[in-house]
Length: 416
Image (cartoon, rainbow, N blue to C red):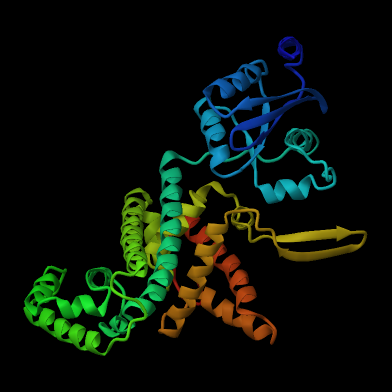
């Protein structure tokens, strides 16, 4: 097998002027490589996803002047290969898995293997060359990484808030009435210190007040008021478990996770604020309804918008471009392709909701008007369909504003 591989290397020298494609199927621990020259398979082998394996691949790539490299974006697994290729200034095609599956579906069958995946990718690039991946600058890569941390921390925050609510129903449900808004660091700190009514009633009033005064923004009078309310709620409480129940530990774990997730969100936002282009941030926040946090997350997911030649490319990158089905004389537009970033679509969907809320508060925009127009155009039009259509409008607006370096204006004469 080793001798055959060396023979293939020598053949690369003679094939340098031919079209040589490296299809790579990346998994968690190894990658399968398929080499095609002028549409014909000449070799396949597996490499480890480390410097040893990547250097083995690099040796073969160096035998060809302009190797064409194609692989699927498989999340964290493909990032190491991507970073290695970037380090060596090698261009590549990085396929969205959904798009790759759609474009190779005619060749897929039930006996699909990793080797065949690499073959299909190489065959796809040989017969239908795909667009080379755009390599974002380090700043934009870090922006996206911070937004992904923010997204995960936000998810953890919601999950643990739900867990906390369920735990409180067993340990001290009345404490949810202690404050008008039962959330925030002060509230969670109080629940963490007094998770059960018995603990409240066993603690001296002076000690409760001292604890409360140690929280941010709480003075002596406010601390006394909260203490009185806390004791009153503890006296009428009827918990389902004792103060030494395992549910207390579950409650404490949920609160600590909440505090950790909140800190992670704030840290990620601070880092994004440092990295995001100030002018782009100013432009996006000029659109009514889009605040700084949402603008930061949009920039983090879209990257440098100036790299796109037209709004259609931006739509395709996000994955809100419609799929087209053609058969004979029939052409039908199906659902959106979802080829791009799911988190990006989620942030833009959130932005549409915020833009709608802004209009209701007296800050109109063309995007909000367009949303309402789509809703009125059909009695069966759902919020989701109208929102997706409005994302197109929003992306076109963002594209025009960034390209022309101008702030948003609701003037009827405004042209995107």
